Structures are given as structure tokens and as C-alpha cells.
Length: 318
Ligand code: GDD
Ligand code: MG
Image (cartoon, rainbow, N blue to C red; front, side, top):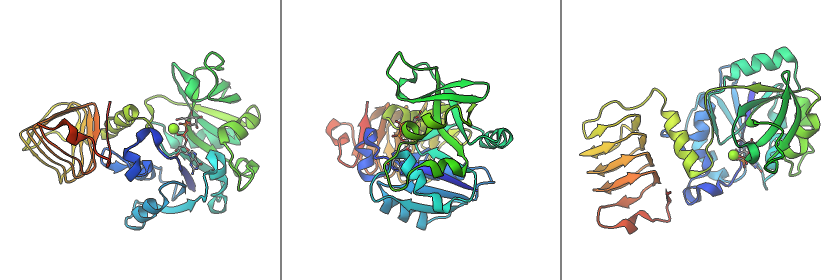
């Protein structure tokens, strides 16, 4: 069984980080987002199909060099085809019911349960649904007795049909992919789902967590959620506070790390306090307090120069 992962976006809201690393390869708790998604796929999925536009070269290189436990097929787009066009572009590699993921979503969804429901209801498509307070920047559904009766993408505030949003995880029958015209820019959310709504489109509401990790704030949140139970409890060079993950190849001396901090590979820190931040690979720092930041890769900072934090290689503080 195949899972298509949509990883075409430019990641504009995570610039300047995404100038040097395509968003899908940005780490979440030290493992690239897209690799994490592939590793989390249930066993019944043996193949991950990556629909790639921006960052093709980096992505090819990354997956050529390692085994991530599933077969990985990279399907390039010459120009961005939109979410629907990108799925359609993968059709030759699809053999039946297919899972599709927005590559930037981190969630607690139980895909096996969703698949069970999808099979039982004989739906044409099943969309994972999540409840939010402000649905206007998402896809919004009218949902009744298990079915999606209407779908609206990014409705104007005040016109939303409900608080249930499209959580960017789908199970689709081939007939939905076949509805998408080939080689055209098509949005599955704007051009296809509104047409299938009320005609075999089902919903799968779930609880737990859902994060679209596309902004600096949500990228941090997704990182901390991804630590899960794999955090670092103690370290010879640091006092640990709360949930923290320190890479085994990081060197720390006289540091206070946490709550909520991730230290990447080959990071070298002395006399630093790191709170609510992600430190990417190969960062060197001395005598600084870092809070609410994403730093790196390859940034150098020290106590007397705030300016050294600003680097074209990528650093976001908010
Ligand atoms: N291959 C490819 N080609 N992928 C694309 C393209 C494209 O042209 N355009 C977007 N994608 C990928 C993005 O990389 C991302 O993983 C996913 O499709 C969704 O695009 P976003 O740009 O992140 O959309 P969004 O967050 O505004 O809205 C989507 O996600 C929400 C949930 O987070 C929609 O699906 C909403 O309906 C949904 O509520
Ligand atoms: Mg998104």
C-alpha cells in the first residue's frame, strides 16, 4: 500500500531556514520532518511516494544515502502542480487505496483506525478532521453522521460552516485521483473536495494533537511534541529542566537546558541557557541565554556580540 506525502511547498514562513534546507528536511527533534512521517507510517504501508517540487536535489540525495524502513519513490514536478495536481502526478505508482499527507502536519492520528473506518464505510475518500477555535485559515467541513456534506477552503471569517477543519491526512480511492485532470495546477481542497462532498466523502475526527508546523512558532511546538518519551533525562555538561533532547554528538559544558529544548548534532555550547528553543546542527555558542528561538545550522554566537546571531545561513528569533 502506498502513502503519498506532499512536500512541494516553498516554506516561505520558515525563511531564512528554508533558504538552505527544504522544509521537509528540517528536523523535528533531530529527525527530518519527512523521514519522521515515513517512519511513523503503519506497517501496511510499504511505499512512501514523495511529491516534490522545491528542494528536489537535496531530497534525492538524502534518501539515496539512507534506509528509512520503507521503499521511497520521489516524483518530481517541473512546476508546482498544487496539492491535487501533485497527487495526480503520482498516479502511476499507486495500486489501490492511498493515504495522502500534507508534509507539514504533525498529529496524533491513528491511521490504522482511520483505515478500518474507511474500509468499513466504503467511502470514496476519508479526511481526518480536527476541531479548532478559529477555522478560517484552514479547510472547513460540514460534517454529519460520519459524512462530509460540504467543504470550504480558507473561508472568510464569519462564513465558516463549523469548527471542524481538514487535518491534511486523507485516505482516497483511485477514482478520486482519476477525477483530477493531469498536468494542471489543481487544488484538491478548492477544485475537488467541494465536488465530492455529499457523495461519498467521509470524516474521521480525532483527538490528541495537531500542528501545522509551517510557522516559526508552530515549528517549535512540533519539535517539542516530537520529543515524546525519547527525551534526555541527564547530561554530564548540563543541568536539565523539563522536556529536553540532546543529540549524542553534542558537547555541552556548564549549561542549563530546558524546559523545552532540542540540541542538534555537533553543537558545542559553553555557559549557555537554552529555553523553549531548537538549536540545529553545528552551532557553537558561549555565554548566552537563548529563548523562543530556532538557531542554526552552523551559527556562532557569544556573549558580547548580539549581531553574530544574524546570519544568512538561517536564524529566526521571535
Ligand atoms: N508537491 C507539491 N506541489 N506539494 C505542494 C504544492 C505543490 O504545488 N503546494 C502545496 N504542497 C504541499 C505543501 O508542501 C504542504 O505539505 C501541503 O501541500 C499543504 O500545503 P500548505 O501550503 O501547507 O497548505 P495550508 O497549510 O495553507 O492548508 C492545507 O493544510 C491545512 C491543514 O494544515 C489545506 O489542506 C487545508 O485544507 C488544511 O486545513
Ligand atoms: Mg500547511
